[in-house]
Length: 180
Image 1: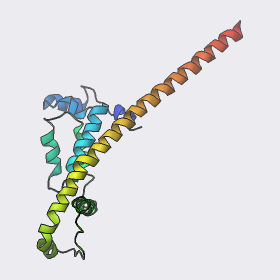
Image 2: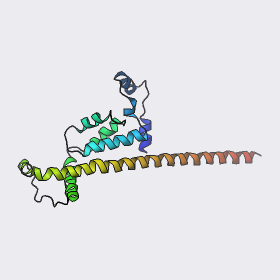
Image 3: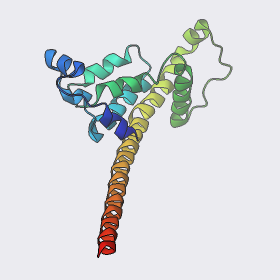
Image 4: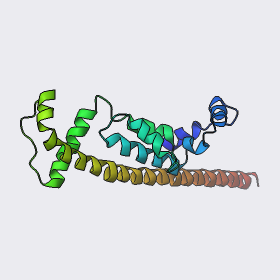
């Protein structure tokens, strides 16, 4: 389903996007809709999106020369961490970091700047251990899942087309036998 949506969004060299890519010498792979480009875009976007840092989209842009991926997809994945989702994501990363480190974690959290200043040294290590887990492990597992779903979608579509082709062929053959 998603694969078909991306295939519909393909651009030709004469379109506005195609002309902009040519004008600014942007490699078209950065807007590719192949399985590899999209799944890598998801991987890179989630990797940077899980990291608690400002300007995560800049991380995506700095990664583009290292590997070819769909940049708009990566930027969309970074946007999953936004001001509404960040507190829950960072809390989840903090709790996961404490679990991985075998620490009990802090009790009686107060949502104030003073509390965070006082307890920053107790928060930062578990937060970044949890961040590493989600940025590396979870984003890679989602990358594998997207790859697998894409392949399954292609196979399902191929089998559907083959079944339609067999039905058309059988219908043509039955018409030919009816005429005889």
